[in-house]
Image 1 (cartoon, chains in turn yellow, brown):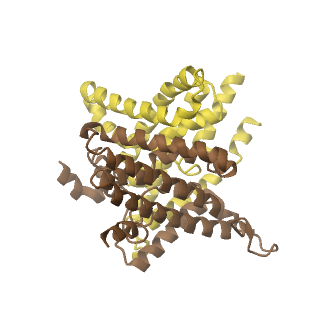
Image 2 (cartoon, one colour):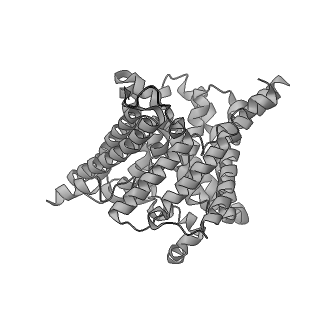
Image 3 (cartoon, rainbow over the protein chains, first blue to last red):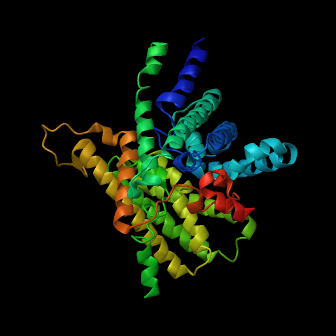
Length: 200
Length: 229
């Protein structure tokens, strides 16, 4: 029960209070670049969640099984980015061959994810918080879900922006960033919610 | 003369951050203080120059099919180097940059310059290009960082500017303020340089080629999708 509770706290923290995009600023490029349509937001969000969880499953054992015993922890950035790049490539190939419909909806986003700082970020974050494997996976899942929720909300906001008459200098990126600022402001409202639910 | 142009183009005309809209994550995340912005900008410049040198030297050796992973490994090597140096030389900057120091690896400005410039040019122009782009990035980080620090905590580089009785607008050092300030700064740059409205997206992403225009599913870049198909 204690474990379930602590896992729930990690999950909800990742989704709401420490939302990856809106409070940690990881994965801004896909967040602003792909959030124009609801469909692509969901696709990108699902792909990121999937890769995050799998990257954690791959990098956690590498860090604690290989880098720590050899005392080369400082190599983590290089090792992780290689593993993530390799893994994304592998998933893309497998998906293309065996799951063409899934590839069509998710696969197109995969190459984008290799250089997405959210994926490398979540693996490094798990290390700095010293989570065990289960906690790391839950944290990655929460981070991915949080990313997806932020993208879905934001695609709704942006669809309204399309029809607005915006001053010329603000068109494009500036107004998008300002809209993101308002959404981020809304997420500050989740501040005490975790403590409220679990009475920590 | 042309060398001079390679150097200066990155600072204003093709500023990677304000004009090309790359490297948004660090621009938003570490600009709560001007000193962090400076540290991040200079670290990125260092990595950018070094990786540009190595990549332009190795451009004939690296096979085309595995060039992106090779670039990333080269970049990650220099990132590890600079974070070890900072850890011992400037521990307070190392601590406040935290994870974002490692995340220089996936900064699309560096990969973008590798792909678009260093892999096609000789060493000297690549160095100048890296220096110019790095300084341009540093300047825009410093600009955003200064605005946020002055408004958000009444200080600049830790020096108290606003009188004590004025309550600083904490909102500006919160994430929401980061998005807002960056939006305003880009809008001002658009206005001053009379630029066309641009979205953050694939058309300026250096990886667009390798991902076959994955985000051209968005309506704005329909034209591009047609071109790729």
